[in-house]
Length: 367
Image (cartoon, rainbow, N blue to C red):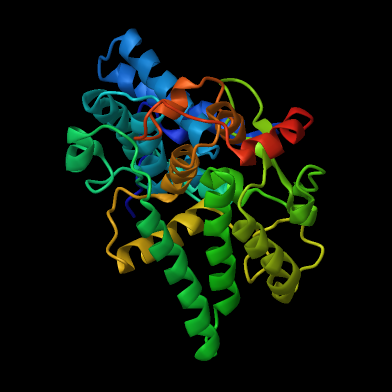
């Protein structure tokens, strides 16, 4: 009988994980072990400390953006991150390409069977890391980004096409009496909420029913006058940032009210707190949002540069084009500096306060 000897490869999971120790935060412990292992693997190849440390800082920043651990990362996280780097940080294509290359290296390390991180994660969390960087979602192959490093919001016509198509899928499923009509209705409403309140994908997936509230300055919206976003993008080393977003689009309020009151109860899980639930009673994950979005986008033959984060960009761009006050929009989307809005849009800097802002501003001050 031939016995296979386990090679102590630098960076292997079995060398970095401490067995027999109960971790208070096993997810954080696993991530730290991954970074230690990657550091050992790079050091064994003769890389300089400065290079290794810079790469580790970048991976930690990507973790903060994704708001998920590496065994939960998907190509969709890279898509949204790349859009953020172009649209929010306005980085050069060469810089973004370098960042994507670092994430690719870390992803390849985690998915290399010789290091054992896949089995370790599956045993601990029931899932495992996958490759998240591919030729179709990295900047070397996104020619439009090379020539125009700005975010790609939907045009109003493109947005209408997407929302109409999502509604059509619900009607088709209902007419055909197909399974999945409830999920299609949920996702059609979800896209309206992302755009209607200017949300990030992860923020949207973690919404609860209780996060909607009343706005005394906009009584026409009833219990859907404000939205408490509890899992906003975190600063480095800090907890997710909360913000209250005031409802401004009556059609979006009508859509979510109809879903909450008439559709969501039919999923059959009345005690579940989540706004978006699956047919099996789980919380809808960001990856599922991305899958449905891509299916609809590709069916409509819309540009592949459009990702779920583009709906948030469109919220900023369209409100700006409609003359809504920049400061109001800035607070709605949780930006700390006004300059972030300038690179979200293609419109001019000449803005006027509208009656919409004048009506809502007092409520925002007390939100």
